Amino acid sequence: MFGGDKLKLDKDLLAKIRKYSGIAGYATPEEFVRHVLEREIAKFEEGGDSEEEIRKRMQGLGYIS
Image 1 (cartoon, rainbow, N blue to C red):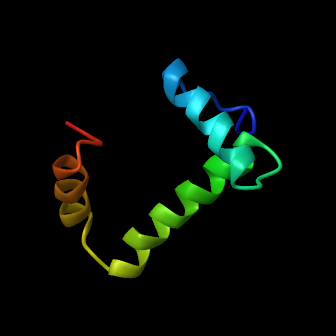
Image 2: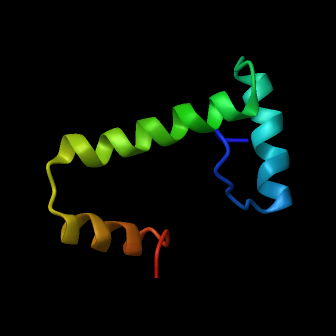
């Protein structure tokens, strides 16, 4: 999954990814995850925020501690 690099996902989250990727019409769960991540990364890139501002926003969202 994901081009040889490994990511650990909670089994419940992985089940949701599999379920909703099919419902949304994606060919594979990987395609769905790739699309979602690319969309989220684009938000950061378009914002033009500094690395520190991005870090604070991600901490506020609970992505990093």
